[in-house]
Every structure is written in C-alpha cells, then in structure tokens.
Image (cartoon, rainbow over all chains, first blue to last red; front, side, top):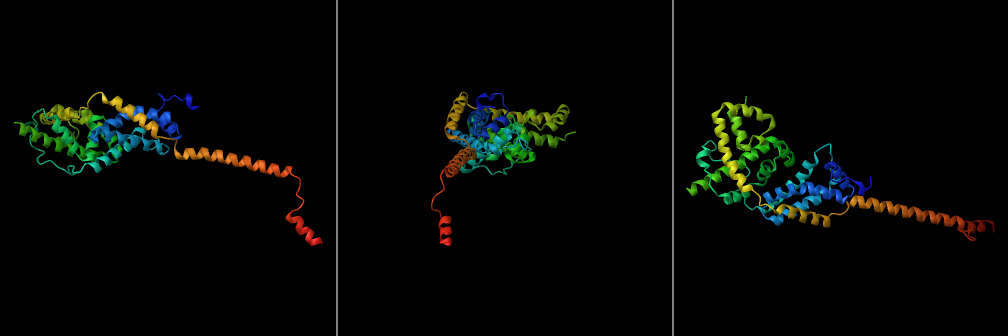
Length: 190
Length: 129
C-alpha cells in the first residue's frame, strides 16, 4: 500500500508503530495526536516547570520514534510500551531536579487515628499542590496514572515496571503523606 | 469474604472510588461495604482526602491543545527517517550504481580489440626468442 493511501486515522496503534518504524512520519504524527495529550498531562503533574515538562515529552517521543522498530506487539500493548518511555523519562527528570524529596519509605505516624477528625475540609489547595510536588517520583507517577488517568493498578504496574503490590504500596505511602500534611494544614487553620 | 484489614489497606491505597480498586476484589469489597458500618466509615474518610487531591490536581483548562500543537511542530522538525532505514536505501542505491559501473566496464573490455602488447605476450616472446 502506498503511503498516500494509508488509513492513518483508523489504523491501530500497533500498525502506526510499524509504519513509523519504516520511516513514516505521518504515522508517527498520528501517534502523537492520540497519545501526546496523555504524555503532556502526566509530565505536567510530575514536573512542575511546564516548559521542562514539554521538553521531556518531546524527548520521550523522539526516543519512541527512533525505537519504533523495537516495539513488539506480542510482548506489550503499544500504550504500555509508549507510556513506559514517557513515565520513565519524567521520573528520571524529577529525580535529577528534585533536590529533597520525601523518602520513598515514608510511613504515616499514626495511620489508625480517626481521619475524620484530622481531615477537615479546608480551602488550602495550593498547599496541597506543593505537597504533591514533594512526593517521590514513583509515588507521584503511580498516583497520576491511577487517579488522574484512570489506569488500573495492573496497567500502572506494567508501565512502572513493578508488581501490582508494589504499586499499591506506593499509593498507600503517597496518601499517608498527603493525609498527614492535610491534617497539619487543617490544624493550623483552626 | 474480604477482611476489614484488607479493605482498609485497599482504601488507603486507592481511595474511596471503587472503580480504581483491583477488579478481582471489588465484588468482595462491595459485600463488606453493604454489611459493615466501619467499612463505610473508612471510605467516607478516604473520600475527604480524595476530594482534596482532586481539587489540587485539577489542571488549568485551555493549555492542552496549544501544548500539543507545540509538541507536534517540535517533533516534525526533530524526527528524521530512522538511520537504519536510510542506510538501507543508500546501500540499495550504491550497490545498484556499482553493478551498473561493473557492467559498463566489462562491456567495454569485450568491445575493445586485444591489446598488442600484454604481459603474457611479452613472456611468450621471451620464451620463443
């Protein structure tokens, strides 16, 4: 089939990846149209500097283009393959440029205490945004993939290269940290 | 039947929205939820944190399309045909050119009359003189 006749809009991701591997830039552009928004959203949540986030996404997609011939449909879904490249680069960037993140093994001081008492609704979203940025990269990535992008724990685990249990622990630590910070905010506003 | 401890662990990881929970555990979680006030209380607590996170995560609207446009332009400028693919075509063209040149050379050799003086001739002459 000549390139001009290729049905880009209706082609599957795997087909587009195959065409991209043979140098079809239009096929890759279709991939960017489909999955660029996801990559941009995830990067924006992991990397607070918007320009840096866009640069990382660009770098990730250039890598995807040059590695398209290595994509193997029988081993992984295209989105898992692509998102893994994007998320890993975001995590690497966040690790390099986040000088003092919360430790990965942070545990809450008192997880059994009544959260209702501590979690009073307060209008301190800006503070919570700052606290979200303090999360270690993998915790932040797990939250973004599951909470914001609606991926299942299993899908997020594949992208992050972890077990589903490990992702569950990342989420639990992230929430414990946020719960703690949120409670501190609530107390300080009383 | 799911234990309250397992329910608590899942709620602490995935929050109050059961759609995020592992699919193979949701039915048991619902069963427990229906019969346990404690489980309902746990989800209510996690829901407060969910709402706060959701407000904090809310992305500013309107920037996504522009960012995608910038991304597409930048990529169009940066990506080229994969190296291996380009070399493959260059190799194909180069080997074609070599084959044509070789054909022309061989053809020219056969068209020419035999040279009067060759190394072989000289050797033969030396031998018989």
